[in-house]
Image 1 (tube, rainbow, N blue to C red):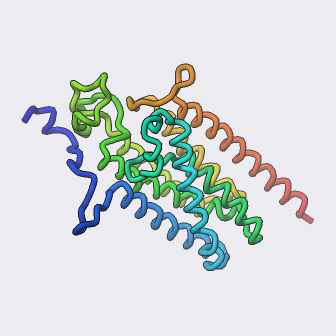
Image 2: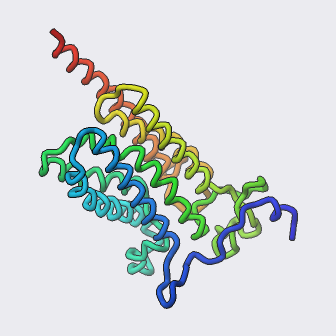
Length: 273
């Protein structure tokens, strides 16, 4: 075996586990585990903030459904060329293709509707979800490892990941090891989740600010990661679409963080004797 393969991370040879006659796709399993972890973390945080667990249970299933639908729709719209010759592939989510931007948009949209109908605190719900989302992403990205996707350019680093020829971009067919951007994102999201928990405990933030920090913190990494990736994606000018989305979301998140803080200060000033 060549030396460069001895100092690299192997990829799983199979992304499907067979439980008797039932095929279990590991990508879907990792997403399911990520959702369960996020739901539990969100529930614990919701109750600690003085809310009823039943309130959370009544809306969370709709948030998950909205997030999954949004995640798939975003991927289909931004990478429509992947489905032109096989439209039914749209429904095969176990093959990969759940975009975090769509998940957040779909989940937030459902959250707005559900909290208004049930008279719940939207900002509190989003703040409870912020670290939960980060940890869910950290878990879910390991599904990309099993699918041999979401990797960067060729690399000979000791932690480079081995990619089978069938999964390599055509222009990099002669290379065998690549940057494990899925691993970088998993580690970043885990660190972000712990950082958000610490910030929430250490500082008194206005409602909604923690969710804004999550969006800003994730987009800082995502922009960098998009520059590393070599898989096919649509571009606008010098950047991939997700690179531009990262910039827009980062600016919006920072603006929201500042505005929410100022609004909270004004409210405190008005209520002061």
